[in-house]
Image (cartoon, rainbow, N blue to C red; front, top):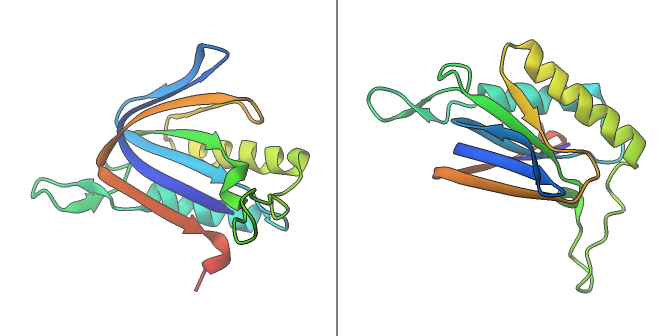
Length: 149
């Protein structure tokens, strides 16, 4: 499982011109589900993302998590995180999980984060989405469950 995690002051997602998810201060998480990903991968990425100490404390050091600052999370499904661009000019998405399984893990990811008491909003799996954000910092991090040490 792969995630691009961005610290934001605001973020929103629209489907067919209608806002379906919107947050203020918090994390925007683009989530890609790969072939072979399991609940273990999902929990690793979710725990890592919400535990990241990337918000500033009173001394302006990145020392607080999204939970510490009372932030929200906007989760966007993003199968293109598994795009392989090594050959030619058209990405291959063969490493992405098939839609039914990917959607199940995406939905579980959102539930798992919400179970920790964080307000979670989301896009619509498989939809053509328009995402707007104000990246704070900018702070952008990549997480990949296959790179667990």
